[in-house]
Image (cartoon, rainbow, N blue to C red; front, side, top):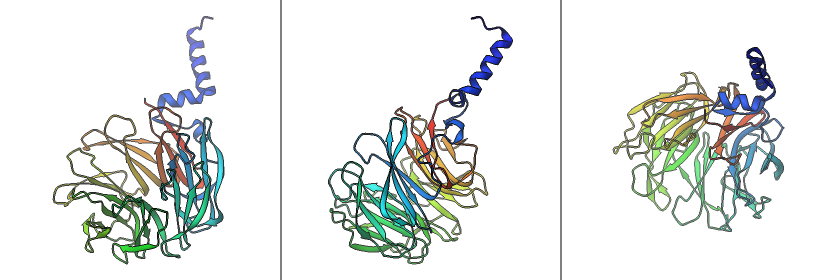
Length: 378
């Protein structure tokens, strides 16, 4: 069939109208048909976080959704199938005020277990049977604390994954794993009055031991606490930032490839900041990214377009979530919105969902669908 010039235009328009998947992929770095077709479940919860991991041993990335925050709600494990997140399982028999649900092999049996960090309620341990079914084992940390995040890392280098608990306005805790998912020995870290929302473990002074980098809210100073060995940290922290930042998230990565780890802070009602590292841990060279009045609730550092440079992904509250693509020298970052819609996004997760080489992104949204977006190169 011959297509005349005017008919060609009509034909192209019809393709865009009836094949939105194709058209979106040609004009956006990330896509979700009609904006909301790809979602992890259909319920709208007060979701605080999402974690991606292979819980059933089939080689793909399932999703754990942590719901509630200050209000008790159900947490879920979503199993990824060839058609998306089509299987949902309850995590726990009780509703929880959950902020975080990270995964690691806690009992040494080769599969991934889950810890949940709950606000003013017991933090819980869930063990995996190897097929993505979880049973509750017990509690860890203080029974009632304002927990905001959990970080899993081997702090005392004994080969077992420990947990760091951040408690907003109360002492933070490190609970040490005995190798069988028992966390009975706990010690505080940081200042007892820290309003900590996030923590990262990274070797900042390059002595082979992981140090702690704290993101504090309520106009408190952000700090680095150096590791003294055997799970103990300096009592006096190394400050970074202005001292009055409202920091909710922190990432550590060498963005400019100079051999020193840099710190990226996600801030509330202020621009996000990159603090470039140096051998003296001064962090006085900085670069701001994002709008001056933006509220970033979470950020990650990942190579999204696989060009060998680490990019920054921001989960924003009240403005579109975005990826800032690194120019390779960390002197400029090109902003691309994941979506032009604004949600109350509390966290993001990055991983491969559809089987291609590019990492995809899940948004953990409060009072809206938890959406995921597939990456596409332009």
